[in-house]
Length: 148
Image (cartoon, helix red, strand yellow):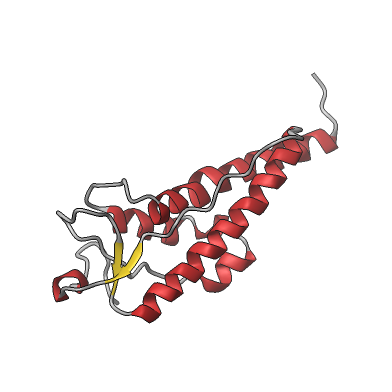
């Protein structure tokens, strides 16, 4: 079957939007916004996305996304949160999470438009699971993140 250049471009754009959604936005939103996640290594998952998938983000996120993730989880905690060393760090990561959310909604709308979905309900923005840490143990350097 012969495809026009316009159809090929549209299909490639759809594939790229899917990749952005599936590999960058959705994983970060799930990690930042769901207190039901309860396994070790979550900060490494965030770090991996930030370092290896940042080429998938847009201008707004690229402008606020730090090079490395500074949050830590507390193993055995009753509630799941990413803990940070200061209130300023919490605010910094809330700003990052808000930018990720805003771009996610933009990309999702563009994706729906390309695939021809006219009537849709957008997801509700989650509460970001960020807090200031209480114990000094939380902020020991992570063994998987080198500080060069």
